[in-house]
Structures are given as structure tokens and as C-alpha cells.
Length: 212
Image (cartoon, rainbow, N blue to C red):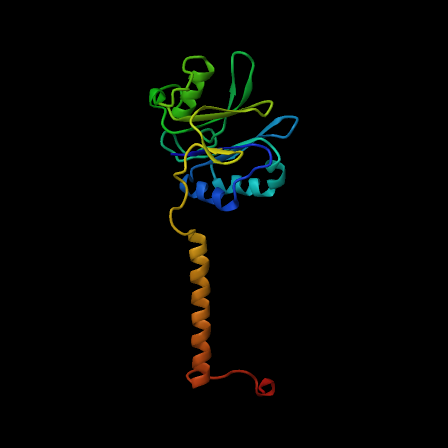
């Protein structure tokens, strides 16, 4: 399915939200942001690389308009070339980066073995506006940091828009569950060891000189 996230300056998803998006869409991730002077992009077919980059540059990205994409591969192999966002150039000279969420069924056949890239190439050439929503959601950030959704977009909260909410965990955060299970297991094991020591089922190896 993938997920696109656009951010206005001063906003960021939480670290947990980014982890949820990545876990649900593990086949490549990228980010494009405007630093006040130029547009930048970082992308990798390994989500961990992109997440690490975001966390290492958190403050810089938080204060910039930005577009983030996590990919779930449906058409085309997992590779940097198929990792969003993609560079574009329009006939009027506008440049920037654009990302897609969904299946562009009109563009499953084309010059690329990737429907997203085919759809974006058709859009660049003026052959498909991609605004009717039938080909999925598309969002772009131009060379001046302006963010535009061609189709789709749901407000997550003020300043943060996403292409879907399918990445959200419906139950408890699994990391919280794992942490709690570990803590419960540790406490249970510690209590059992203490009980065994007190009942003599295991020897006390504390040196005699250290015993009180």
C-alpha cells in the first residue's frame, strides 16, 4: 500500500509513528525537504538507513517542509531506483520530488517495471494529471519547498498529512508489550531466585567475609 507523509515546518510524526509506518511498508523509504535554500533528498531501499538519517537530523527536518515515503513493493523490485520520492521536471521548468501511494492501474505497463514511475513520467509529459484519485495518492514538494497533493491526503493532525492510516497499530504498541513482558519475566525470575536461595534449593555463593 505504501504511505506518504507531508510535513509543514514545526511538525514531525513521533518516533513510534515513523516505526509503525516503516514496519507496515518495509521495502524502501525516502525523504525530501527544503532547507531554506535548496531541496534535498535522502532515500534507501533499506528503511533502517532512512530512519537513522531522519533521527540523526531530526531538528533540521522538523523545521522544514518535508515529504516522507515508506514503500510496500507491489510493482518492481526493491531497489534505490524504485524508492520514492522520485525527481521530476515539468514542461514549465518546475522541479522537485514526488511520491505515490496505491496502484496506478493505467500505468502498470510502460518504460519502467514500476507503476509509480510510469505514472509520474506520464504526468511529467502532460499525458495524465493524476488528480482523479483512481491511480492512488500523489504528493510533491517543489524546489521552493511548496507541498501539493495531486490526489488523496488525510490530516493526521495540524501540519501533518498522510495518504492513509493503514499503518497504525490497532492494539497496544507491540514495543510496549515486549518491554512489559521482559520486565515481568525479569521480576518473576528474580523473585524465584530469591525464593530458592531462602529455601536452600540453591547454594549461597556469597563469600563468607561478605556475609552479614
